[in-house]
Length: 215
Length: 215
DNA sequence: AGGCATACATACTATGTAGTATGTCGGCAC
DNA sequence: GTGCCGACATACTACATAGTATGTATGCCT
Image (cartoon, rainbow over all chains, first blue to last red):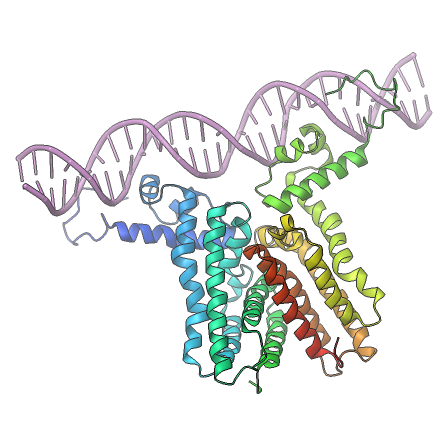
């Protein structure tokens, strides 16, 4: 590719020897492939081909292919879940309103070519949790965190009078997360954007039914 | 295993030469393995080991491994979906009541050891639809059938005054199927039976919100 | 009786894939 | 400068796995 000698000639050579960048490049490429093809269907060579990283470098940074999956869960999917579903809620006076807006936003923002690939977290969980206890524990922890954070927001909403006093916020949080994941899954399977609108309507109806006033 | 010569000696030999049985044995074993491990993680040899069928017989009945998956969709999953979710509804005067009962029944009937494996149809769809158009078309057809039949039942309920006149039964059917599949998926991922009760509560609330009277 | 298609059985191959053995290179410690 | 460790690079191996080549047995049809 490039001569290994002509290093500090013109540029200060940010290329060679940048372990953090190499590692994150691997993760980035792995994420894309795993998202589209699934974890087991993604070969190490696929990832290498998308990065230019060599096999030696790969196994220098990750002891095994599975460890890339673990890092994906710990570092990428966890953050992605927080950014998509949790952190935006803090900005709303009424978090339930935030949930409704977030659902609609995700539905609108997802590009057509990604519709058929569903939710990255759900995909990896469905594939790997039943057959690998390390994946299972890591991914389950993310789900519990998601549910727990949703519950916290609903509790705040309840304290501020937006959610009916009698509502079991824990159960409601589990239903909300189920609907958020389940909707992405069904749309993935049908690859039909219109379905999202129906599901949005149902989701909204559920949120209204636990709220004290219309959204 | 057994001598090929001692055939019609004592028993009339129902064993040898029963192509339909051989084929259904393959499908039966394949279903179990695919359900637990996933389609791509199930090797042909795995299926053979669980049946005693030889590789020659296997590829005599199915031109390729993928064709077993196609047959699984066409013959097994389609029927299973109908038996689980659709056919029982016909017995109810109020189909919405039937949906609520069916959800609860599935939740109670699923044995602990199957909880972690989720819905067979959803598993196969999640895994194979994005990467194989034949799977995609077959599985999508089952989903549309499921939704369509649910819509039909809701329409009947609406005609009989159980569902509010203003409700979009098509959209409601899509939400119902999403909740049925999404609940199994979330419970699979969390492997926690108690979650099912929360989701049942939310499902019930949704059904109530489209009904004219309490269930 | 004998031909022939169906229904198997066995042994082999081609290929993809995770992982390893081994070497090299660059920069910092001293 | 030299030693040394981290960060790569290359070539190879061991193994699983879908699929095939080829052979054989069975039973029905004529």
